[in-house]
Image (cartoon, rainbow over all chains, first blue to last red; front, side, top):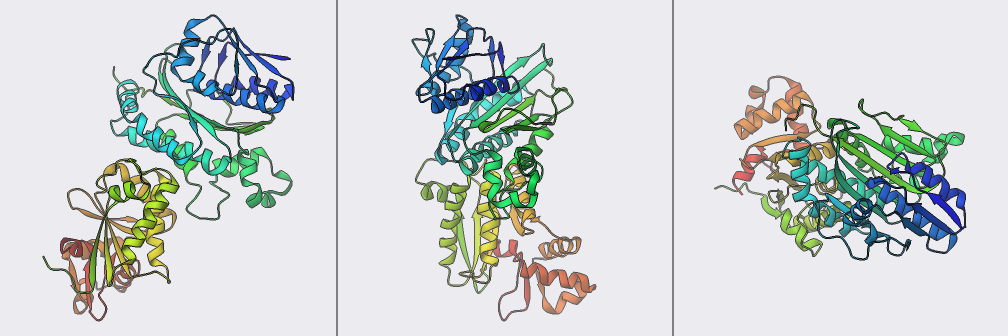
Length: 297
Length: 194
């Protein structure tokens, strides 16, 4: 059995190490040791679900997830719906909660995206919670819940339209007082589909010849709006998401295959392009929306 | 109220079409499959007109519309009836276009270089999409006057570039000239008569 240690903090960047270990594990049965996990964001959660699914599929056996004794981590995972989503993926270690957590003020629990109605359900569900968080916590205009809903809809649709496999979405707000000095909202979507390169290869690989790969595929979609569909009305989703996230001075990153591309605001330290990452299936999209700096509490 | 001869008003409540088309309680226009279903239902309704259909697409009940739905319900809908093999001649006015719908509608129109007339909740009409300065000016003048007789065009628009723009607006279906008639109508006037 391969033991994979989870880091103390699991977010859209530290999840790379997790993916790398899963890839290296090959077909071995895996135990995910999360006893030292102290913080996990939405991207960490959907990333962990992705990692568990890949480990399960490659080994033919459900991996074990061993959580620590930290009740706050287990409680938080429970409130985010992680254990419900993890059914069929992980074997519980010794420390899964026996009872599901009660209702909580989570912006959007982990939600599977497998069909069109799931996207509608997500948009319907976040209306009330998102409005309050966006205006009261982030200081965005009251109307921003509409743009937020559109972002969620478009990013979830990418799973259905391009991945060819189901995925998950989750969102939550955090007080990053130490890290950033303000609140943020994080939206994360992950799928285990064919990735950007797989989605675009048939239509676009020939024009790039030897340069075709994960980086060129990401750049083609993220920067140039290319899509596998010949319909000229397509390919706008990512562009419009980027535009709105930029307006809010946020960050958006897309990891697919061996590369990650991002629009990075000044207040965050990350490269706009990373390559040479472990070749992990599917796509992971992460959006960080910061509190407005001129927002008065 | 006077209905222009040769024009048949077709009122379409998109919220109602949404609920009927996808047989659900959805209240937001999101996802491309939903947009496609709504568009096809609208097309079927419009295609049933015996005359030029003045299609009043009512978006009053819609607060959230994503870009995929806007592409289907606005851009593709317009393109279908600009196509040479369109089922009927049709004009479109998008009603109840609140602030939150402006950006997705404008974006998809610009993407396809289309023009559309939108009416807000106060009844105020505006031109949305891709247009030249001349087209914008001519449309605004026509909108203000309501109608311009053919005999008046040279006087109202002394410059040939404006007269050309007027004809372009007719071709782009944001101004109307009935067959056999030489009166240029603003679509808002037709809407008021509907």
